[in-house]
Image (tube, rainbow, N blue to C red; front, side, top):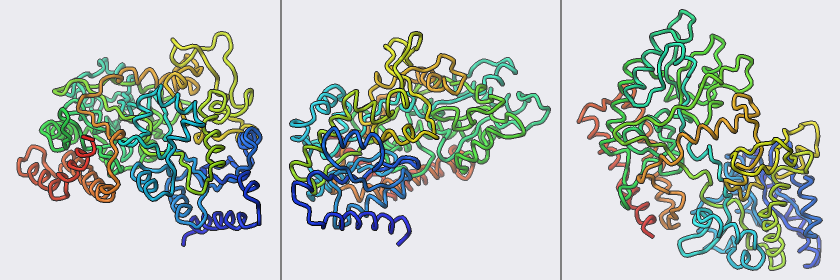
Length: 543
């Protein structure tokens, strides 16, 4: 057993022993065990927000803890579930180890976790109000038969909703006297000029017109000019059906359509002309950023990312990140489309287990209900007023200038424990609406580090509403647990194959202009079970 597993077992075993001390049932109800995830500086057991909760609800919380790292957290959570002593509740963060939809159904059917519907009705008025106020939140939360096995975090991160924005070096455009490209052909011409006309002015042919990484693929942004493309294509298996789309109400493989082939043909043309970084489909994000930060100077013409900090580090003395500005979606045969993804993750970060008796269920739900209040949310996420946040002052302007300013997030003082250990951080981001996020005060100068959020916001306005009817809303589609294991295997096989073949078509290993190569690719999809992959999602979508 590896050290992480040993540590998790010891932590759980310790709590199991603690439960065998001859406490009365009433005393035991005063102690609630929660499995939670914490950052390096946070100690949930000594955290001041934990202490506030304990005092407010007359309870003693004992946290089983793990870190934010996905592999570590997932392993620790699985050991916790398999152990002899379950915690009474799990409170997680989405990117670490939250429960999947399939897990919710499985553990719910097994009686490991409890349905929350009646508990919300009885003790969760703020939660019920949130579910009614945001239909998308309710749709994400309820199974097709109306059960609520757990609560996901609802996070209306506006700039996260369009993750594949294109950032082009507008300083280079100015240097060459060129306009912002608006079509694939214009993009080709601009990138050719970036390659050949020395836009960085150093007298060397060292420019890299287009770069990318396995995490920040060039494919979705460019492909959207030819056919609507879900996010993350090119990055390998993601556990999500990113190759799928809709034709009316029919689920289909977008990556087997003629428009996909046409997009590959264009990107192959870019590659043959030497306009794409040879490492774009193989390097990690750190290598991409290293190129963007190169000591040789500014080398990169454009890239696709949620924000420019993925390719060039904010805070550099030369401020080169400010050379990159958002390019609107290209207009092609498919229109001017942009990839949309729901920023809230399907599944659940909060569940109550069978270990909680009626009294404990009530208290746990009341705690979560408090975190859905404005007071509990702000205190839980940001900390104490005057330390983690402050009220707006005259002249402060909200991120959305039409909203009344609500609060100012004060930068963390890492030397002050009351600050770094004064909140639950991302674990408390339980219900963040657009209004909540966008009413927070942000500086007006978008080319400062402090004003970066406004920069991302303004960039996203170029993409908002440009998603297609072909978008497949997989996040609101519940696949029956009986199909989940088969689907997991199909997703890995099909999505990995598509990602690999996409790179091969672009880089010349396969020829997108060859009917034989294209037919072999489509046959390969069929051989990996793509028809069954589509069928499972179609059946779930139809429910």
